[in-house]
Length: 193
Image 1 (cartoon, helix red, strand yellow):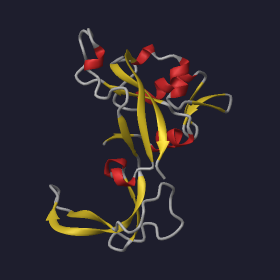
Image 2 (cartoon, rainbow, N blue to C red):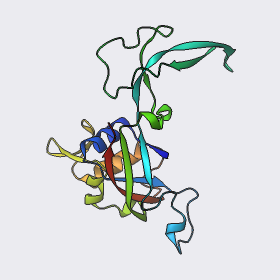
Image 3 (tube, helix red, strand yellow):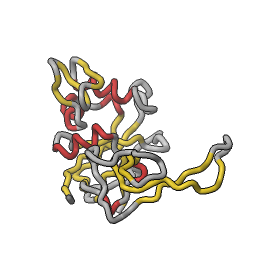
Image 4 (spheres, rainbow, N blue to C red):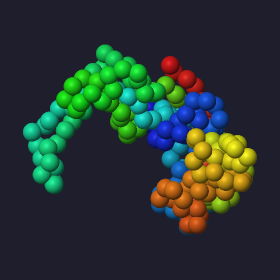
């Protein structure tokens, strides 16, 4: 099964059930779209495991090699007897690089065996960023907060869901102004743990 990356705030929104859509920039950007179903990486019915940041038990081992800048190279050695945690553990957190403890791991290193969520694609559309409605933005995880709209815990506060989502997109390399074509995926989530 393929994985799909999400930021911590977006993974939390999926877990809580408030995020049911995601968009991914099409690469390369189409010039003409006669049959858009052929250009989206994922199709209706596809199952993807959610890759998210997590805490894994293990320690860092010096490989004996050097980086380009001359520093020691380190590799994380995970203990698979201890399950990963998605909330910061209350014990033994980052006690030292060489000592066994829980270490925060980037979503890139999230293995399928450790997933707690699988999403099933239920609808696929091709659109431009700026074609999104307020309802699409809410389905993307934007929520009401303090008299306006925000993502996560107060980030990108704005007066409307669409403006909030615009702030979010402008914070990553796919800017709202460029108005790229995106694959808009609607999904349902299944908990595995």
